[in-house]
Figure 1 (cartoon, rainbow, N blue to C red):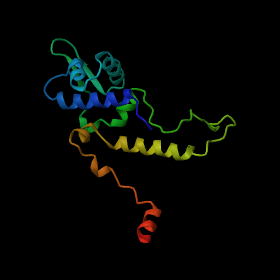
Figure 2: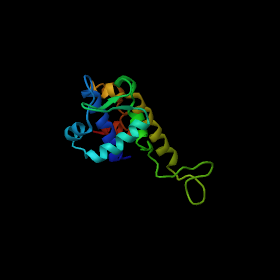
Figure 3: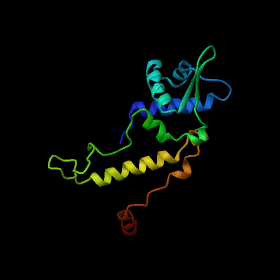
Figure 4: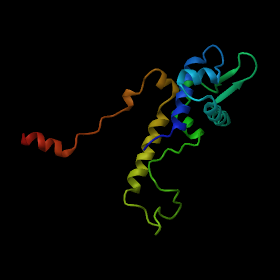
Length: 157
């Protein structure tokens, strides 16, 4: 699964906002410069983030944006969904009651990719902006067990 630029840039900008909005609102031009993101692209993303009530705009001199709630209460999954970025790994369109193939059956790997998308959503829902700022992600990442054939290969050596 590849997260599009829209989702990645929205998360980058929100982490930047969380880091710099302690004392005063942050301008989009400052975020754009620090994160090397087009200002016009950020304006589009922040319009969506504002509609999703993840940020608040402050008008006037010294205006800009603030988080609508604390960084510990803002989940990465919310940001991605706010910019209309689906968190899914299937290539299938919405199935409803029927399958994703022309004959209305599921593709052979549909359940695998659907569950991967679910796990990605669960992970991103467990991560807050604060976690990203404090680099508190390592405990959430669990190593996969070694493949079964690697043990038999080691024993054969």
